Amino acid sequence: MTISVCEDKEQLAQKAANLFLQIAQRAIEERGRFVAALSGGSTPERTYTLLAQPERATQLDWNKVYLFFGDERFVPHDDPRSNYHMVKQAMLDALPLPAGHVLAVRTDLPTPEAAAEHYEQMLLAFFALPDRQTLPRFDLVFLGLGDDCHTASLFPSAAALTERKRLVVATPPGTLPPPVDRITFTFPLINAARQVVFLVAGSNKAKTLYRALVERPPIWLCPAVGIRPADGELLWLVDKEAASLLPPE
Ligand code: 6PG
Image (cartoon, rainbow, N blue to C red; front, side, top):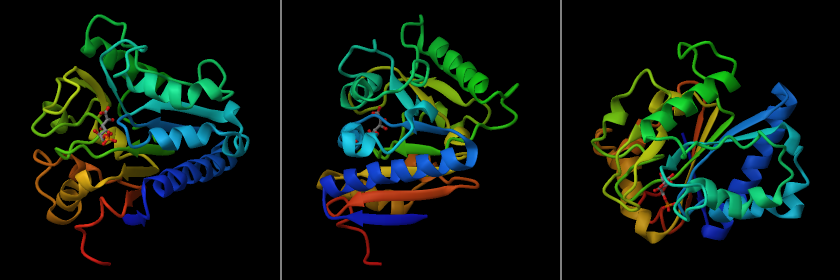
């Protein structure tokens, strides 16, 4: 695990956007395509905006890029609480991504469970896997850290934390807003990724970051502790304010 401390939120967003490009270029060179899972929340929004700006956007062959969502709120895609909506506004509208390369969670299905099941089937079909025995490997998974130590939509005490077989599950609202059902990647799927990157910024995250990285409570209390890529890299990209309680290196 690596912790990289940035000067401020802006530097964090720039580093994250540059890292996205580097990982994407390497994946395309090595495997012919780049498959990423994006996170919601407010922190990555600036990173997405920077990726859509011409100086960065023109560095990548977007025909070879596929974007999934590590979690989603069970609200329509045009709802401001939707992660898809945020990413669309911040970057998708400005990028030359071919149709079918943005694999959003279907929130127009009758229930969050149906949406989770459908997303899992979509993932298996995309990665051409017959069943869940072999885990899909994302080239990059972006994650955030909630004030209650949740990540993706893996909330403290939720049943989703103990899921070992399913790749995607529905989960009831956590204690933090917005109070809507969620669809989330599970630990096995996230931990199979080649690279997982947490983006954490702001002084309001300092205590939680200390808990997740130093105190390391049990997973049911602090789900972020459960992110341990089995055969991949884990990077915490944080800003100085969020890192203010961490011991000096
Ligand atoms: C969501 C998320 C969630 C988020 C954290 C951090 O849909 O809510 O994906 O896990 O990343 O809550 O959010 P902030 O970046 O807004 O602090």
